[in-house]
View 1 (cartoon, rainbow, N blue to C red):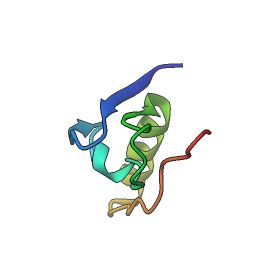
View 2 (spheres, rainbow, N blue to C red):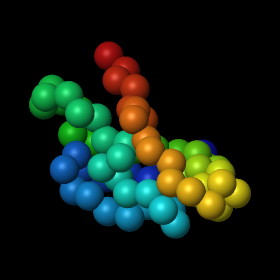
View 3 (cartoon, rainbow, N blue to C red):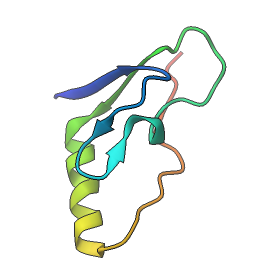
Amino acid sequence: MNYFTWTKGKNRQIGKYFNTSEFECKCTYTDCIDQKISEELITQLDAVRDALKDYLIITSGFMRLS
């Protein structure tokens, strides 16, 4: 599986409509600086947005694995 990876706080565009800040962990832990999300998920979300012809608001996209 391929992933988009980034450092927490370094916003960049991923996919057609989304950017990393929408999926980034919002916690204050110092050990979750490295972020990643599946490229396949972003491709699927882009397709849903194209089909809806409207915005999708991402409210959560990060799961902390301890």
